[in-house]
Image 1 (cartoon, rainbow, N blue to C red):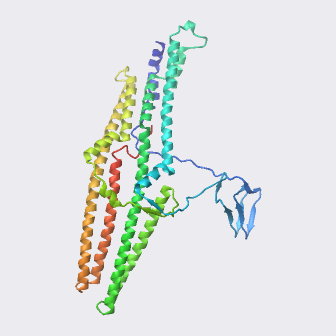
Image 2: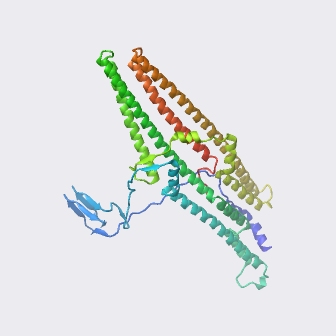
Length: 471
């Protein structure tokens, strides 16, 4: 009875403490944290105190050592400071960049496997997984602590006051326990959070792996697209050079004018510029890919897959099925439903209060808001899935349209070549059709890439997603 009396007195104040334990499960973003590191050098080769090392015309060279100064600076004039064997030495360990090896052949599946098992992103995902496991264990320990405290209070409450040791006041101890959060209400919440954390640690980990896979696919496709664009640009250059050669031959026999030659030369110059630009973009895409996989940025990699392979082999799940998949799997919804569970516990804790009291009304409002948040989350995810499906259909149609446009442009080029040979059409007309073919090929390459990326985005949206949630 003593404990029950204390609980009734403190309930209003404790509700504030308990409510802070409610889990804001609808958060969909993730926070990136970083830690700064201080570089420390050891085994100093040159140490100065209150003085400067000055060098004129020569170099200061250290081998496997660091230069350390205290209260001064190292000044060189027309000279360099050179280190060998280790450019930067941190506590005796050299920073080594990845070395270039023999040419690697790599499929998309192999690239994804590498990204999920090695590298910074995979390491971060693993650390987050361990952190989530620790969070679940922490909730379990809190449940155990609360239970032990309550058992102790129950025992003291059953002992007559005359038999208690001097200085032991069960009422005061119950009050202190309540203030510390050792309540049945908090115990229920901690149990719920423990179960939720343990049940979704792997979901969080999978969401991060999905994001890693998505990033890998994106950069792999960018390389494939850059390769296609580079090849198309080279083919266009060959075409323009062939046209120039024919124009020059006709000019030599008086069939064409100098203007026609200049037009053809200009077309070749434009094609050469396009090749250089496409090559630059390809080099950048490959270096970005190598960096992402932890390779030397200059590593030679042969990409064995093609974009057309992915777009032709993939079946599109119907929108209704995809929506149901997402509603069953998305981790954001699991978090939203968990928030409802927590607020139901909090409302149940104050059910004895008058229905018009501030304490009861606030608890009820919090529960209703959590339900609305969950309902909105379901609707937003359905909208997202259906929109992705519609966009996917648009991308698929764009691929088909791009193919038809290329067929049309190619046939137009063929006919223009025939009429040009007969002198019916001009060199300018021929060059225009060749440019149309070049642009149509680029358009098809981009359409295939967009469609392939849209397919993967639609697929990921039906699973746990690509964003971890706090546990």
